[in-house]
Length: 251
Image (cartoon, rainbow, N blue to C red; front, side, top):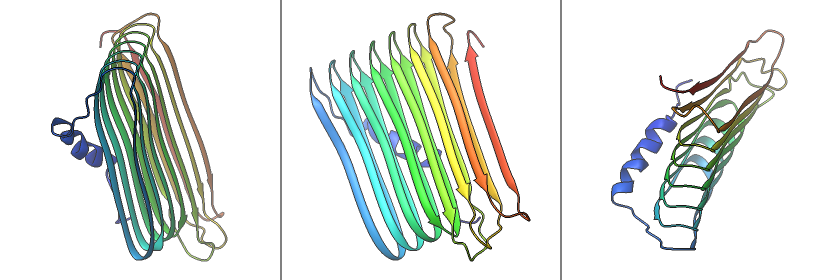
């Protein structure tokens, strides 16, 4: 697979924009950032990013990227980045990608840093692709400092190949969270479906990683889950690797 994209590189680039792209709010604002892209052609490249800094309490922030493409060579890249300082804020970050073509590369990432109490954050990467060469990578990252916060991280990948060609879908998904404080809740879920139809009989490679780290040793609630489904012909390989990691207390 020659056409690969790094979600970590994408989100790192946009996190650098936080120094110059600032949205500061006082109390009780509702803010929405959305990007919608639809492309059809031979070569389709879609890149979108939302960046926000929220200072204050009782704010609602929604960041959403939606990309749809049909073509021969398709690359889709979407990233949301936010920094939240305050209490009782609600943040939703979502990257949704759908592609149909021959060579498809999808990369989606959400990153957030929260300082405060009683905040609610939801991060979701949703990718669907139908084609031959398919590479999907999704990544959520959260850093939370405070008490009574909730962080929900979800990644979903669905790849289905052309039934008359040899293809090898690759799906790589990860969630990572660092929590400092008490009475916090973190839920991480990853689901990936890789299906090679008909005479394709190609290999399917699926890998996923959930990681939570906290120095606090009491009064937190954690959940980690990974689900894979891979299907191909009798002469092919299904390679599935899953890892849940939880570190509680001083390391």
